Length: 470
Image 1 (cartoon, one colour):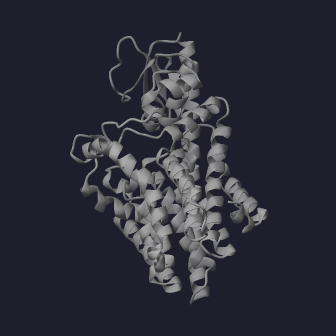
Image 2 (tube, helix red, strand yellow; image 1 turned 30 degrees about the horizontal axis):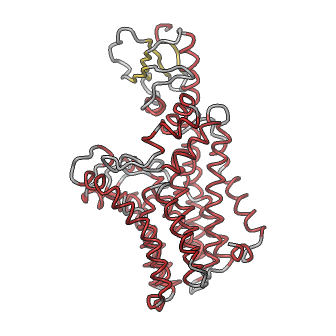
Image 3 (cartoon, one colour; image 1 turned 90 degrees about the vertical axis):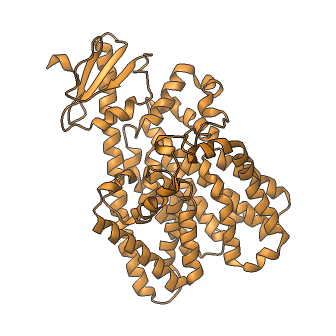
């Protein structure tokens, strides 16, 4: 690692972090949270205390085979979430600042890694700065519960740099032990890390003779061993997700691949699209235009850097999407690793060597402008959602006390109000403020009132009120 630091000035690192923080200020300023996932951790830490959270909430912080891919095995990520939950209620700005700084740390590591692989300082710096503001990374950064995407990529980049130290810089065999440890940390942050050994192809693309070297195969084994152990452990869950036993968002099927590929490939250029699940509302001509725009980026990269660069880009862009392509749900935070690959390609087109430099740079500037617009759209979406969640949640907590802390609350949204917000902060929860258990039920506006439940309604501005008062 010290050798890496000698390759870059401290000013470069500072610039990347400043770009990250200033470019994502709207995410840091978010007064609320994105979904129930963060709030469930808050409830658990408040109810059990942090140490008991780590020890007792086994479904989230201990290894388990699970009965399907929907059961998360992410002890490192959930441990970090537990730490953030300690300040989540009173200081959301700290939670979001940590999220953005973690993203900035990944951007800095990306910069170091590109220098290690021989890219120029300008390409590495542009890549890191573009990645810092990349719209494909916004949801994974603004949604605190998606921290596992950031952390598995962070550990993965570190593992790849250690592999480089062993393969090309002739480091000692002890470096392989660090590779195994980092791979375990990545896998236990998010299961998608099982695809990290696929990055060994980068060494082959850079120099095919590496296939004849023992060090390359030693490093390949070090990368693959934790993955094989993990897959052997969770094979029952994987099989159940494919054989129809699992249901819902994690019922894997080959039929989902052809639907997911165009969505994830077009996403960078669908500048009005927020959550990827809303792709069904995108008109076919816009989807086609976004796909063609991304193909044009691949074509320009081919023209400037050759077919190997273009093929390597497509391979790396899709590599970490491979596991989620089988799932029926489409989610923007799955694109976090792909956003790093896209950023490197765009930086090469912008400032890298090759023919038609002026024309390709102009095209890259246009793409950058579209990306910044998309980033602002996404940040605004996350901020407004968090602000609405905060208004509704604090209102519900205040009304719950006013109503005498009833054991059951029925919530409904006025016509035109964002009903999904009620579902976002009530799903899987039975705690209001510091009071539990409280049964939280969300019903349609015109549903009959249930006996024995206090009724709370929400208007279009996310303000809540006791329904019997109007």
